[in-house]
Amino acid sequence: MPKEQPQEYPVTVEIEGKRYTGFYTVNRGIIALESDWGELRAHVGATPELIARRLFLQILQGAKSRGELDEDDVG
Image 1 (cartoon, rainbow, N blue to C red):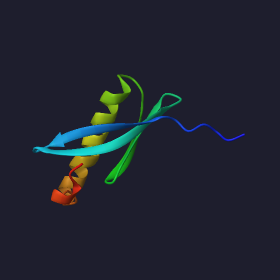
Image 2: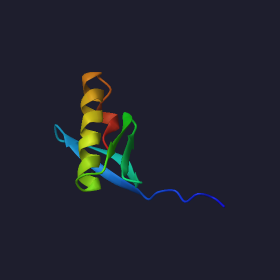
Image 3: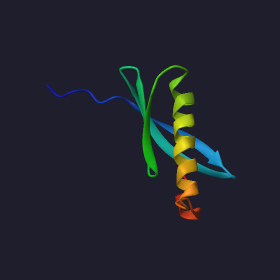
């Protein structure tokens, strides 16, 4: 019997006027955020979307510091 996949939700973060989109799932109290710039996981405490935004912002800040964000990446 195939295992059911968790529902995937989009999350958008704006940095310096540019919008970026990633996707998150919630499964067994863990939120997993995935994007073109990386992925992070955290325990659910606040609302899943708020946690996903925070995780995605961390990913994008790291990508920006590495020079990985450019005009073509706008979501």
